[in-house]
Image 1: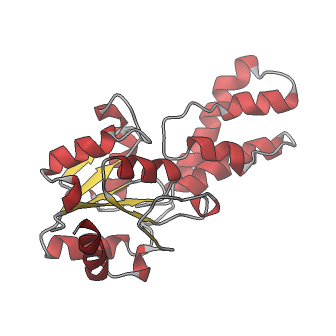
Image 2 (image 1 turned 135 degrees about the vertical axis):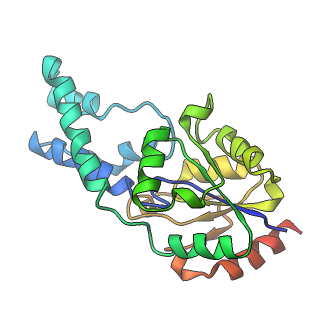
Length: 223
C-alpha cells in the first residue's frame, strides 16, 4: 500500500532549472559565447562539480581573475530574481492537497541546500504540508547516490515499496530507482530534452494524471 510521496524540488515542484540556465546563458551571450545543454545537463539534479565560469573562460581563452567573484554573484542574483517569479508546476498543488486528504505522508528529497529548498517551499505556501525535508545539508552524498532517498524514507517511516518518487532529471530518477522506488518522471522544459530512462511513468505535468490513478498504477507495480 502506498503511504507516501517524495518530491524533488528543483525542476519538479518548481521550475528553477530554466531560470538557472537562462541566467548563465545570458552571461555567456554577453561575451559572445554559448553554454550548450549537453554541458549544463551534467550538473542537473546532482552535486556534480561543473564550473560554468571556468567553462566560459576556456572558450574565451583568458580568465576573469579579480572580476570572477563579482560576475558569479551578479549571475546568481539574476537566477534568484528569475526563480522567485516561478509558480509551482501544474498539478503539484493538487497532488499535495489530494495526498493530504487521503492521509499520505509527504517528503522532499533535494540535492540543493536547505535554505534554498525551504525558501521556495515557504514562498509557494507549501512548507507546512511536508512531513520530512531532506537536503544536501543532511547527507554525505547527493543524487544520483540513493542517500537522500534513504534518509527521506527513514524520516517518513515508510519502506521503498510504500512510496512514490516524483522526479524531473536523470540523476534523480537513478537515485530513486537505486532504492527500489516507483518513480514518476515529470520533466521540465530543460530536462525534457534529456534521456529520462528508468522511470516507471513519464508525464508532461502532474495535471495529466490524477493522483488516484497514479496510486493504482504504482500499487500494481509493487505486487
